[in-house]
Length: 139
Image 1 (tube, rainbow, N blue to C red):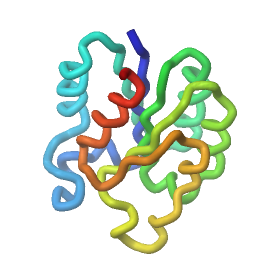
Image 2: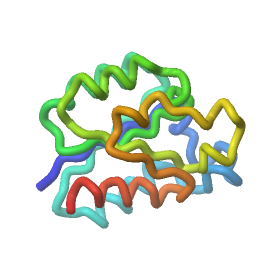
Image 3: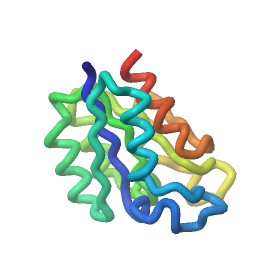
């Protein structure tokens, strides 16, 4: 059994309500139930915060005992060297996920501080990107 943390950043608590044309109509909590049904033999943990420090604290808390971190840092992707440093300081590997294609959006979204410390990035595939990231860690 693998232990995976899904770590979502700012404004992702509004999925299903926020810009449905970009992010869809499903809340992440509803999608999380689907993920847990797809991967019943694995522990899928979830943490969302609008606060950078809380996200860093969660990475430190699980970063030496979990098998993977699926991180969608939201806007912190483009601004937070501190999140990148936290990911590089722990032994648990991370995969970066974005619901939208960040490279097809505003130019400030094209750069990620996290990419250099993650195993890879999945973007533009909607919520399905989370499932793909989990598959990377469990198979």
